[in-house]
Image (tube, rainbow, N blue to C red; front, side, top):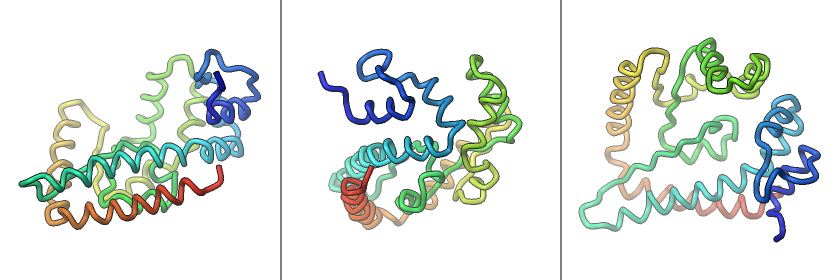
Amino acid sequence: KKQPPIITDEMNIMNQQNSSSFHQIDRRKLGDIIFQDATKRRMLNKITHPLISKIMMKRIVRQGFWPSFSPGTSSSVVCVDCPLLFEIGMKMKTLFAIKIVVACTPQLQLQRLIQRNPDLTREQCRKRIESQIPIDKKVQMADVVIWNSGSLQELSKEVARAHEEVLSRVVGYGFSFTQVILAVGTIFILTISTSQL
């Protein structure tokens, strides 16, 4: 079978002749490369972001638009988990009416990353964090912030508060808001499809 183009392109970034198995990339090796080389990180983003964005928009349109035709449905909320939303750029950010950031202190962010990845050195973890927009700047760009610096009980209260805030903001959008998402989403998909990888 022919290797998918996106796999081949990622392997080229790593100078890897063959992936560990068909349709798979050595993610650890790829991470080590792109977090040390900004040029290769941009190359990877150009390969993956258009495809990810296209798939995401299709799902947003499917989940957010079609339910509005159901009897008794006045509005719908679609939540998208997008870790690098602010890093992707304005074209993506403008698609979302409300942007939520889950934040903690930079020190805790590094500590948790080290705990989740015991095979990474402290320096490798630090480089991964530094490749992203600082958390304090993301907080400034967010519409709603969920603070996750405490216990699970405290986090649960933060989520409940954010949930109420989001619901209070979306009341009144309803069908017209979903129409806007569909229109912008369709244009965005066409733009992504014709852009150069």
